[in-house]
Image 1 (tube, rainbow, N blue to C red):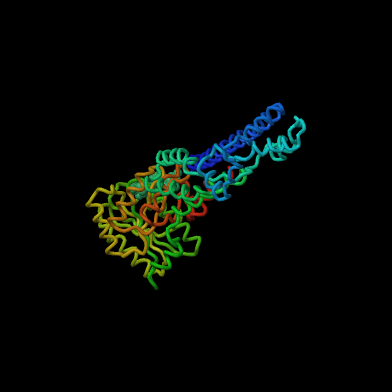
Image 2 (cartoon, helix red, strand yellow; image 1 turned 30 degrees about the vertical axis):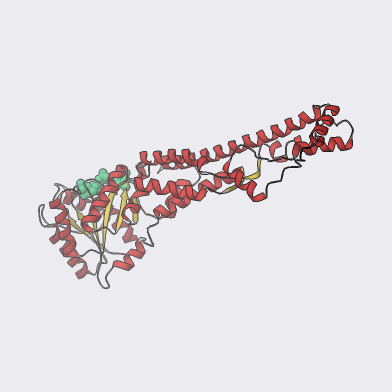
Amino acid sequence: MFESLKKKLSGTIGQISEKISKEEEEAQKEDKDKEISEKKDISETPLEKDISENEEDIAKPGEEDKGIPEIPKKDETDKEESKKTKKTRISRPWGKSKTKEKTKEEGKPEDKSLPREEIEPSEDEKSGLFSFVRHKTISENDIDDILFELEMSLLEGDVALEVAEQIINTVKEDLVGRKIKRRSDVAEFTRDALKKAISDILAVEGQDLDALIKLKKKQGEPLKLMFVGINGTGKTTSIAKVATYFIDKGYKPVIAASDTFRAGAIEQLTHHADKIGVKIIKHKKGADPAAVAFDAVEHARAQGKELVLVDTAGRMQTNVNLMDEMKKIKRVINPDLILFVGDALTGNDAVEQARKFDDAVGIDGIILTKADADAKGGAALSIGHVINKPILFLGTGQSYSDIMEFRPEWMVEQVFGEE
Ligand SMILES: Nc1nc2c(ncn2[C@@H]2O[C@H](COP(=O)(O)OP(=O)(O)OP(=O)(O)O)[C@@H](O)[C@H]2O)c(=O)[nH]1
Ligand SMILES: [Mg+2]
């Protein structure tokens, strides 16, 4: 499930980490090379020349003593460092003349071997790790290209535009300006930023199934769930699965065969109902779907059943007559929850359908089917956010138990968890 989304995210973590670490390694190497070559210059300079140069420097009549340039304050060097990633890592304006002074002072030939601790690699370097000696600050420049690439590949993976944009912006906001002390920080910060961005996207305020039922169910009445969606998304199969889910929780359900439109729909539902041992209320093909739903609610009331599940005909979101028919069912039985059933494999289309159905009848929650076959994860990531309604269930296969309650934390774990 969601393998390609997972791959994209871990690819981005790798890319950002690689890029920043490489730049920092190069910058450090440059600094070190510069340092070594400066020291070499000095040690190879004949002492007399060195002295005469210094004398010239010091003793030109009429010339002001330039002195040692002022050392920049710590704050300023920090700021400079965050602007430039490569240049002037160590600002040592005083370095060279100070060394010369020292040579002149001591007046003896310089020891050509460089101080050991300065050229020998640190323990970290020896072990193949390296440490960020100075704290690198992540800049927009460091991550812009990679995040743009991620945005493009999210869009290709059927993530809705507004969702992809929000993920990128949240990650950028989170990362830019962060100080990195060690290499592993980069991956950790990027992973955390992406995780947060995705959690934010998936969170639809405090609305899980239990909360919704508590909020919507009328006292002393059966819980009424109406399933809507276009052809073939998995409404009928989901009804059988959801019935099974609630039976396990102790409910006694009844099913309404309100798809009186499609040939074979009533038989299909009857087959499922028989298999799971649930009563089905049905009329003839072509009968009024609202009347079937009404009878099912009456049956539940009379028999003390706690749950009514209403199947409806698949319809195109653009078919006005069929949409009107659904509004009628809604008016007649006043369902507690209208559940939109969308096929995860249809990606952006599922998101658009959800939007249309929400406009027409008002959706309370989403069932996303065929997640078992969905590598992209685009619909799962986007659909709830776009219409601001929670995904309540994922369909994960063709058997009655292949349904799971959807939790945002689970999805985050799924796309960032171990391989
Ligand atoms: N792999 C997989 N297949 C599913 C899932 N849910 C439904 N299906 C399959 O999708 C096909 C269509 O399912 P239905 O339940 O008939 O869809 P529907 O929305 O009722 O279709 P209409 O009645 O024509 O509108 C069936 O072959 C189901 O077995 C799922 O979660 N995973
Ligand atoms: Mg059906």
